[in-house]
Image 1 (cartoon, rainbow, N blue to C red):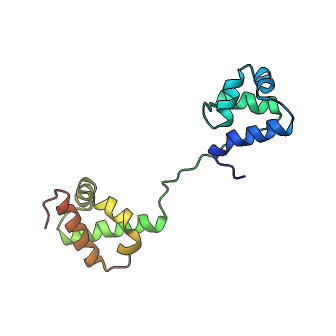
Image 2: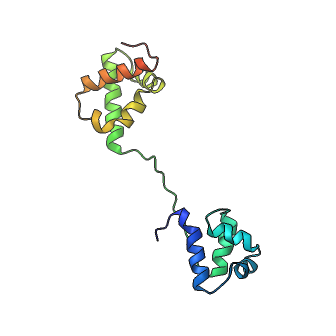
Image 3: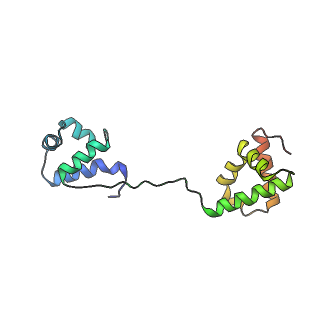
Length: 142
Protein backbone atom coordinates (compact mmCIF):
# COMPACT_ATOMS: atom_id res chain seq x y z
CA UNK A 1 0.00 0.00 0.00
CA UNK A 2 1.43 3.37 -0.93
CA UNK A 3 1.85 6.09 1.66
CA UNK A 4 -0.78 8.47 0.33
CA UNK A 5 -3.23 10.35 2.56
CA UNK A 6 -6.27 8.53 1.20
CA UNK A 7 -4.74 5.24 2.37
CA UNK A 8 -4.67 6.16 6.08
CA UNK A 9 -8.24 4.97 6.70
CA UNK A 10 -7.76 1.52 5.12
CA UNK A 11 -4.37 1.21 6.84
CA UNK A 12 -6.03 1.85 10.22
CA UNK A 13 -8.78 -0.66 9.41
CA UNK A 14 -6.27 -3.35 8.40
CA UNK A 15 -4.22 -2.82 11.54
CA UNK A 16 -7.33 -2.90 13.75
CA UNK A 17 -8.41 -6.19 12.17
CA UNK A 18 -4.90 -7.61 12.42
CA UNK A 19 -4.94 -6.89 16.15
CA UNK A 20 -8.40 -8.50 16.46
CA UNK A 21 -10.17 -5.36 17.65
CA UNK A 22 -13.71 -4.29 16.86
CA UNK A 23 -14.45 -0.70 15.93
CA UNK A 24 -16.13 -0.33 19.31
CA UNK A 25 -13.05 -1.60 21.18
CA UNK A 26 -10.74 0.71 19.28
CA UNK A 27 -13.14 3.59 19.87
CA UNK A 28 -13.01 2.92 23.62
CA UNK A 29 -9.20 3.04 23.56
CA UNK A 30 -9.26 6.32 21.66
CA UNK A 31 -12.17 7.92 23.48
CA UNK A 32 -14.52 8.14 20.50
CA UNK A 33 -17.53 6.14 19.41
CA UNK A 34 -17.75 3.26 16.97
CA UNK A 35 -19.27 5.62 14.36
CA UNK A 36 -16.19 7.88 14.49
CA UNK A 37 -13.86 4.90 13.97
CA UNK A 38 -16.01 3.84 11.02
CA UNK A 39 -15.70 7.35 9.53
CA UNK A 40 -11.94 7.37 10.02
CA UNK A 41 -11.55 3.96 8.39
CA UNK A 42 -13.55 5.14 5.39
CA UNK A 43 -11.27 8.18 5.02
CA UNK A 44 -13.75 10.69 6.42
CA UNK A 45 -13.40 12.67 9.62
CA UNK A 46 -9.62 12.55 9.45
CA UNK A 47 -8.05 15.10 11.73
CA UNK A 48 -4.44 14.98 12.80
CA UNK A 49 -5.47 14.83 16.46
CA UNK A 50 -7.89 11.92 16.02
CA UNK A 51 -5.67 9.97 13.64
CA UNK A 52 -2.74 10.38 16.04
CA UNK A 53 -4.85 8.99 18.90
CA UNK A 54 -5.97 6.04 16.76
CA UNK A 55 -2.43 5.28 15.63
CA UNK A 56 -1.20 5.47 19.24
CA UNK A 57 -3.97 3.13 20.37
CA UNK A 58 -2.93 0.67 17.65
CA UNK A 59 0.76 1.02 18.49
CA UNK A 60 1.70 2.24 15.02
CA UNK A 61 2.95 5.52 13.63
CA UNK A 62 2.74 7.41 10.38
CA UNK A 63 4.65 10.32 8.96
CA UNK A 64 3.67 13.01 6.52
CA UNK A 65 6.01 14.47 3.93
CA UNK A 66 5.15 17.92 2.64
CA UNK A 67 6.40 18.77 -0.83
CA UNK A 68 6.18 21.84 -2.98
CA UNK A 69 4.70 20.42 -6.17
CA UNK A 70 4.88 23.73 -7.97
CA UNK A 71 8.68 23.86 -7.97
CA UNK A 72 9.96 25.10 -11.33
CA UNK A 73 12.98 23.59 -13.05
CA UNK A 74 16.08 25.84 -13.12
CA UNK A 75 16.22 25.46 -16.91
CA UNK A 76 12.72 26.91 -17.20
CA UNK A 77 13.70 29.87 -15.04
CA UNK A 78 16.84 30.53 -17.09
CA UNK A 79 14.84 30.33 -20.32
CA UNK A 80 12.17 32.73 -19.03
CA UNK A 81 14.79 35.26 -17.89
CA UNK A 82 16.53 35.11 -21.28
CA UNK A 83 13.23 35.44 -23.14
CA UNK A 84 12.18 38.45 -21.06
CA UNK A 85 15.46 40.10 -21.97
CA UNK A 86 14.92 39.39 -25.67
CA UNK A 87 11.32 40.63 -25.45
CA UNK A 88 12.58 43.85 -23.83
CA UNK A 89 15.17 44.42 -26.58
CA UNK A 90 12.68 43.68 -29.33
CA UNK A 91 10.10 46.14 -27.99
CA UNK A 92 12.56 48.80 -26.73
CA UNK A 93 11.62 48.30 -23.07
CA UNK A 94 13.64 47.96 -19.92
CA UNK A 95 13.80 44.43 -18.54
CA UNK A 96 11.64 45.55 -15.61
CA UNK A 97 9.01 47.04 -17.94
CA UNK A 98 9.01 43.90 -20.08
CA UNK A 99 8.74 41.67 -17.03
CA UNK A 100 5.82 43.64 -15.59
CA UNK A 101 4.07 43.66 -18.96
CA UNK A 102 4.54 39.91 -19.45
CA UNK A 103 3.28 39.18 -15.96
CA UNK A 104 0.23 41.43 -16.38
CA UNK A 105 -0.79 40.02 -19.75
CA UNK A 106 -0.04 36.34 -19.00
CA UNK A 107 3.15 36.03 -21.07
CA UNK A 108 5.11 34.47 -18.19
CA UNK A 109 2.28 32.01 -17.57
CA UNK A 110 2.38 31.10 -21.25
CA UNK A 111 6.14 30.53 -21.20
CA UNK A 112 5.92 28.38 -18.09
CA UNK A 113 3.02 26.31 -19.38
CA UNK A 114 4.45 25.83 -22.89
CA UNK A 115 8.14 25.64 -22.05
CA UNK A 116 8.54 22.21 -23.64
CA UNK A 117 7.65 23.62 -27.08
CA UNK A 118 8.75 27.25 -26.76
CA UNK A 119 12.33 26.60 -25.68
CA UNK A 120 12.90 24.74 -28.93
CA UNK A 121 12.07 27.84 -30.98
CA UNK A 122 14.33 30.77 -31.79
CA UNK A 123 14.07 33.77 -29.46
CA UNK A 124 12.52 35.75 -32.34
CA UNK A 125 9.74 33.17 -32.66
CA UNK A 126 9.24 33.08 -28.88
CA UNK A 127 9.03 36.89 -28.76
CA UNK A 128 6.42 36.81 -31.55
CA UNK A 129 4.42 34.19 -29.64
CA UNK A 130 4.64 36.24 -26.44
CA UNK A 131 3.57 39.39 -28.24
CA UNK A 132 0.50 37.61 -29.62
CA UNK A 133 -0.38 36.02 -26.27
CA UNK A 134 -0.19 39.39 -24.55
CA UNK A 135 -2.29 41.03 -27.28
CA UNK A 136 -4.90 38.29 -26.83
CA UNK A 137 -4.95 39.06 -23.10
CA UNK A 138 -5.43 42.82 -23.50
CA UNK A 139 -1.85 43.99 -23.99
CA UNK A 140 -1.11 46.83 -26.41
CA UNK A 141 2.42 46.15 -27.65
CA UNK A 142 2.55 44.91 -31.24
